[in-house]
Length: 95
Image (cartoon, rainbow, N blue to C red; front, side, top):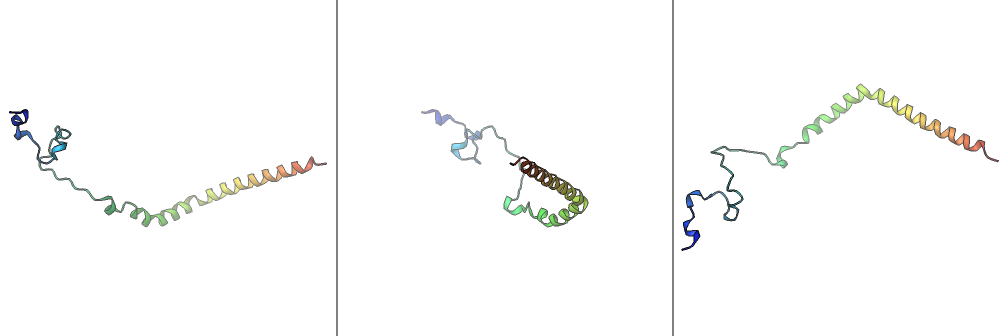
C-alpha cells in the first residue's frame, strides 16, 4: 500500500489540470460569479480618438495657434539674427 492510496479525492480540484494542482491549491472558486471581457481586437480602443481628432486639433489650433506661431517667429528670428551677427563678426576680423 502506498501513500497515494490514502489521498483524499474530496479535496481534489477538477477544474485544473493534474500537473497544476499544487500551483492552484489555495485559489478559491468564484461561487458562480461569471466574468466577461472583450478581446483587445474587438474593443476598438483607438477608433473614438481617430474620429474626434480632427475636431479637437482644429479647436486647439484656433485657440492657441497665434501663441505658437508668434513663439516660432521669435525663436526663428533670434536664431537667424544670431547667425547673421556671427557671420558679420567673422568677416570683420579678416585680413
